[in-house]
Image 1 (tube, rainbow, N blue to C red):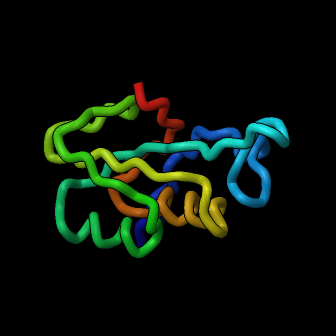
Image 2: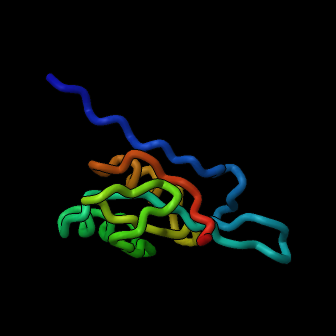
Length: 105
């Protein structure tokens, strides 16, 4: 019997987010963008889309997470219902190693 794959590390301060997935002062709350890499296949993209409707696919981009050849960079937003559950589900997807904050640099 093999062990289940370990969920990816979610490297975002979830405690700084309110119930709407926003952070910051009351008069200047902002969403947090995050990024992760998946295998660059239609099946992997479909799995992400089922979990995260905010996800955008950026094949060929490396991002801060360092997507490699054969991988597709994905960027999503915490400003969505159940953002914690979405991040947890993304972290369990095959091929997702890390989920990090995206700074759109």
